[in-house]
Image (cartoon, rainbow, N blue to C red):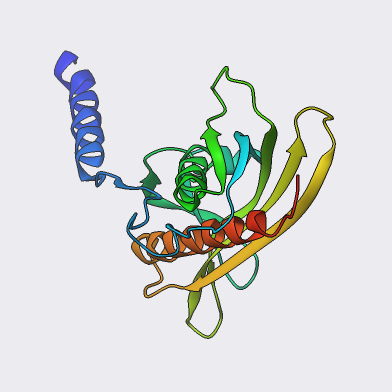
Length: 203
């Protein structure tokens, strides 16, 4: 009787162990463009004696995690089961934006959200979309949509606001293709952000 009782349990544990062993390890990706790209290093002829502070990026609950999302032609959103960002996009994007603005030499200094230093300006942002769109015709693209708010830190008034959208064709309809396209899209937005900030005659 005892043997008959334990045999199903042993088989259950063996099957469970096999299922665990068959799960492939997750591929880990990051938002890290080529730092020598001319779009990342967009130098401005202007130089303002002001300090700009980067505020934390706001986003929906889905975008503050590490999932890599894709949306099909029927607007069904899912995440790639075995692929992840190495950090949440809301943490990775500010680094790219800060480096791009620093390389432009547009301001005296750019400080991160955690800095205790005082600043003249604050750059807030809301990440509206970071997704891999898969279309009916078999093509796909990486899409990033983000809105920036430039704020006078002394008056707390909004100087200007601008929404940027970048859509980059993906070479493949998988996580790798999505990440490559999204990296290029992030670089495009960083480039356009610097151009936008450089347009102001005064802050």
